[in-house]
Length: 360
Length: 269
Image 1 (tube, chains in turn green, orange):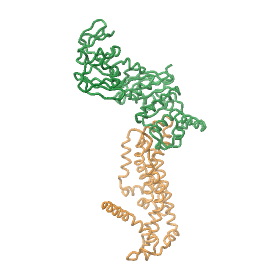
Image 2 (tube, rainbow over the protein chains, first blue to last red; image 1 turned 180 degrees about the vertical axis):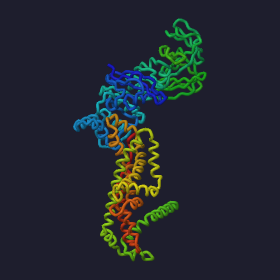
Image 3 (cartoon, chains in turn purple, cyan; image 1 turned 60 degrees about the vertical axis):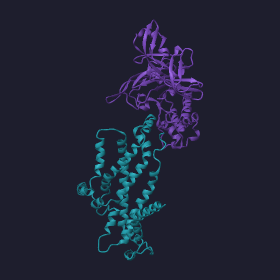
Image 4 (cartoon, chains in turn blue, yellow; image 1 turned 135 degrees about the vertical axis):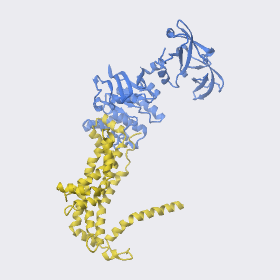
């Protein structure tokens, strides 16, 4: 059942259009992540759902109710800010109790709710402290605690982990995932970090310049990116792209020419072959982690620039005719800069896009 | 090392320079008239409380201090009560004429008070307000509200907007946000502006002289009133001066605690 629905939502600041018509629906209990580069409008979209920004056009529904013009507090949503936004003059208990006090709940209930949230987030020992006496991770947990005490219909997270160091970030990521499981609540989470998006989301909405590029589960986005933007954004290191020319088309077979390809060309079998003709540009997408060193039947013939050992795996930077290619390979291949590098890939891992960047 | 010594000497010179008149006033208030006029000046003397006994025996002085307290306290209180919501609006909302309003607050202080003394006197006379507490409170408000608005607007602007938005999501209305978030976090700025307002109202002489007669004379007016006649009663003037300075000093000490308190530390990141 649809719980959150965005119906052609738009946002304009004067003449500048920031969100150019976003439609999307999430069902109850889903964890949705908005991801995209900075300036894509993901935070604005989240703040429109919260009611902190006016909707210029379109409709917004939460739990079947049109809340497009509803006051933030009446939407029964809670938000965790990137800056945490804790009230600095109140202790942890009062920070978490503030929303309940605003709702004029009886003191006993406030106490019970805050203690419950403190227990879940292991904040019991810190209830008397002021925010300035807490570490970044603790502040983060208080911010989350403040949002769960009111049992909102919808949780919103605005880049909540971006102020934390790497270790704490992955730890908090796990805690948020656990929280989502135990509360069974609907959550919308904004991040520019595709790792956070991949690990947390049931569904990812990829945004660019105020428009939705693709919506899908993390594996869908990884396996079937709709265009080169999504293909490049999801997955780390980034997918390699090679702009090849079609030299022949026969039935479902395509022959693509590029100097980086082993033997100067590559034959692929694709039902999309009918849609291209000789002379067209086709972008070949190859994920670094799918490329293998020393394959019997190599696809790429390159020169190694340098290799980075990550301990268990090695990241290879290679090039041919100016096109940089990154490969991620297990172990430590015996290679040095300047060596010829032959890379293979399984045919099912070859992605093809047309000249405009759309998946073929 | 030499730099440090010079630094210390410089600081000491400034301290002596600023504190000497104050020390001299307090010392003179405990001297007899002949000790005060002695040349060379007397540094060690038998202190006397006679000057204080004299000025407090004179109901004029104690009455004036009460008047000053009434006027300064009420005008400070009112300027904070009226000025802080204005500062909140200026800091957080965009509205038409905002910059004009802002400039108006500043331009208020550009006019020399003496220029307005006569018009204000006539206004007060026609309104039948001469020699009342009210007229002084009103006229001091025109000086104090801009001070409060300037200082507090700046302070409010430094409060992260995320806090207000978090409070809105928590269900707080504008007034609650103002009262529960902005007032406590803006306390240092409010305290500073309150000190300024109080000190200004307490020390103001020109309008107090022009607008009051007998009933509502404030302390500075009474202090100057000793300076008429053939002999200057220095001991009484100095004792009155000391008594005038005391409440302001105490008030400043009380509120200065708020000034040094960490402001919005720990609110964000």
